[in-house]
Length: 188
Image (cartoon, rainbow, N blue to C red; front, side, top):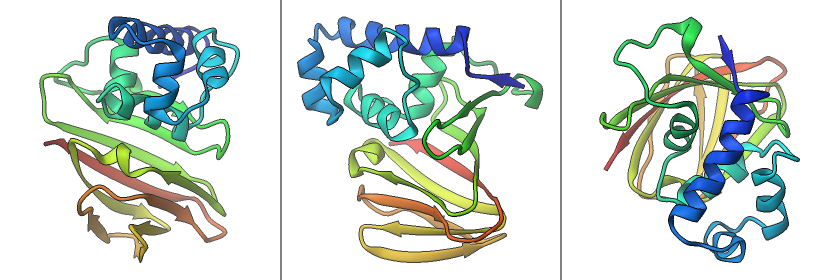
């Protein structure tokens, strides 16, 4: 298992700076485009803080990337075969949710992510997270509540929800047990 810490966290911080500088954006411009404070972006780029999933999603969206795309650029090019032991894993410091990048390549339209959301935790993602992608979530274990654009769906193991047009989304585990779900993303 490849846990995104230490060297990988440093690569992620550097990648965010590289993406910003490649666009010739100031910290203030990236802050405006991402709705992440300039101070937070500066701390992330310097490796002083580990960004939450929400911060990473907002930054990736500002760069016109998915979260997986940003992580993949930080980790290097993906392979056609994705062995579980080699799949990058990242833990959100705020919610403690665990995100495994099952499959992602810059030249392939499909990305597959596995997430374990701890009990009584939730993640709020802005509509901008879903620009240029189509997404479906399938619950593997437990129960997941998804609020998409104000519409509430409760999914049990085996249930799958395809997302509509970009809208604000909340993913919540309202139970006392961990929830594992798979996210299927296709670039549009």
